[in-house]
Image 1 (cartoon, helix red, strand yellow):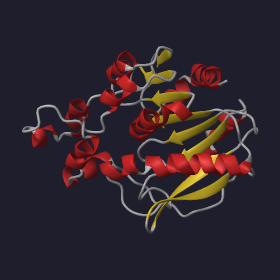
Image 2: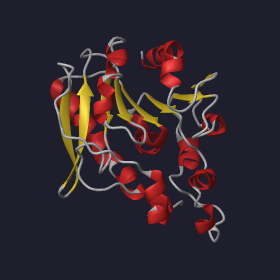
Image 3: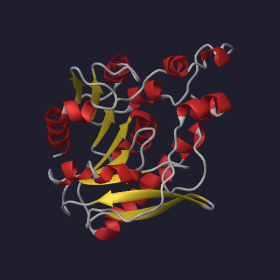
Image 4: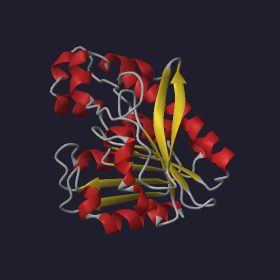
Length: 262
């Protein structure tokens, strides 16, 4: 049995953490969108993660969204209306040390915290009467907790969406410039995205920019190829990079998500 926690623990060293995470602190303000509401999910004693729920319709699909590095839930005030317009309820989760969330981020905790966040997501939806199908989505760094949730709870989910995600740990360590620190580990596990996705059989949508120079499109295509889903789709957007993918490919991007979730 693969020890995924060992894989993340091996990466919890300053040389990796200082290159991998770019947390941005923000004061906790209410959303500018009248229907949106902040929620605080307890992931550990004295550690709460801030999430923001952008509701649309009671019976619409519900997406648990893990955002990218350098972002916070507050950034999604500008993006959530694209989902709400398509009758999709969006629930965006932060990480430790990001926005107004407690603690400091580590590789182990970003994976561990995804479990209580998923449970909190379900509980909040149930209490508020949002009974539509459940999906999990991760962008960039968020691909790791999203794939973790899909790997463990696929019986409760209707699909997995990965945007600009990474696949192979060794490639990630090379991009971070720390591969030499792992020379005694021939096959590092890291977050295990490439391993876990093989066992994820629910419908899967992989989105990636063809000109992504932060996480190359080959990583997204590797996730697509390795996916264990019989129903899987790949959307690889020409000329789009890592941070302009939604801008340059908005029509194709949102159409794919709308069709995938409805």
